[in-house]
Image (cartoon, rainbow, N blue to C red; front, side, top):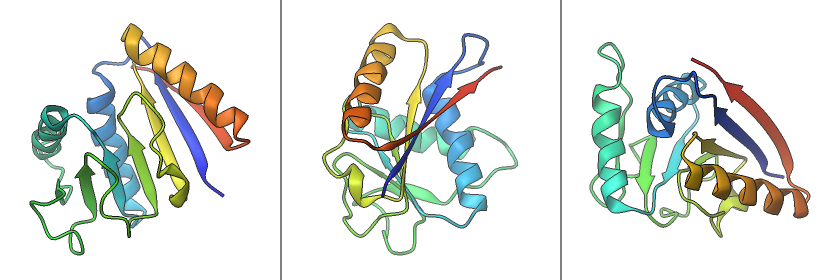
Length: 143
């Protein structure tokens, strides 16, 4: 059964959900897990790709955009549509809706910052997951 973790970034958090995504991806990778980042807006996907190269000088997170890297050898993939379908460990959802393919993952991470549109969409996703009887965890992230 899929576990869904919501990460709510408090107003004191320095940065946005894309900054936090980089930190979370780095932490997940230390556990040896593969990550698929669902980022359906191609401009945001490219921005996250660049940010993963620069978010911390001493960090190296092997990653790439689906279709531009060898998915088999790249442990962090950024995808607009859930491809490749063989990924099933950790999904980081940066979309405003629940992806249709979320249930194939062991764990889903939903990142919520203080932007009004993001907060509203996050509350709607929480309610939807709850109606589906999905195991939910909530984490408040401060500065």
